Image (cartoon, helix red, strand yellow):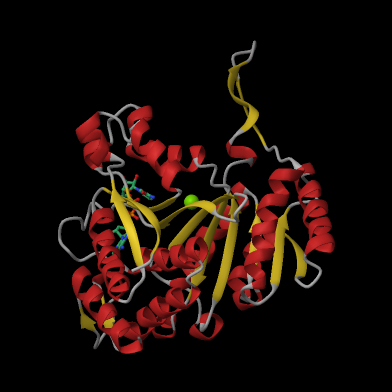
Length: 368
Ligand code: NAI
Ligand code: MG
């Protein structure tokens, strides 16, 4: 049997580990159909702290860089709230993103037909919605220098943050956006505030030049970030791919997330630069956290994590047909009325985490 690749599993804490179990089962299902992954597993977050005294060891970091493809659960929990900043579980996640140089964060907002009623908007505005928010993740105001708080002579304090972008930082994330659009509906909205920010001016010029040079077949529209926020809640289906900076991406992806209804449904991918063979380092993870309030009960919704795994199949291994099939299986079991507690509706069939996994595997069998 041909092995298609290696994956590093970092389940983490709380429901992170619970939902990752369902991904394991799908990997087992794929192996039985001749698509075999070599999976290695390691500790991250509180789980790593408990054993090693740090949220991510150097050895695990090296392994993530070497294997290049990481499937991540979630980290954190009340047990770790009082740890010093550098030892907090989240530091493990941030270190992975930083040292793997994962600059392109993909957050799809997809509304399954069966769940259109769960959106914060009217069903007709979101039915069939499929927007990809692409957020620059390693630059901008989160990292720009100078930054900090200083004391002034008159006793006041002064805080500074700096937004910095270079053309190459803008170009590499925009390129990911155009490539994504070509595999989708061929439309990119580039979002900034060129009316008030110099980084916005450079962002707009750079994205336009890249499009004219390398992606003339892709439709490009520029939009101010405030207008984009408004359009997302007014007429979200006008969007295909939205590419934007770190800060606006943070806000707009959370805004788009609410169009879909539940945190337990939202996947994400973070991609790094392509090497000479076109392979990218990447990490895939549900958007939700470790959910200490429901951890250990076996009731977490595994769909966000499974959708993240579908993105792994599509973007790291070019297994688009398998990714489509997994997404279709998920959509079908929702149509059949299966629901975990977080998305329960009247008349639905309530299932546990593993019960949802069972239904999806059964549907995969039927679709195969
Ligand atoms: P959270 O996402 O863990 O939970 C928020 C609410 O949504 C909770 O009521 C939870 O039960 C529910 N929820 C989340 N995912 C769900 C799922 N798959 N199925 C059903 N219900 C789900 O966010 P919260 O409560 O703010 O943070 C809890 C811990 O997780 C904290 O320690 C936080 O630092 C950490 N966290 C970690 C993240 C990560 O690892 N990427 C992201 C966000 C938070
Ligand atoms: Mg946020």
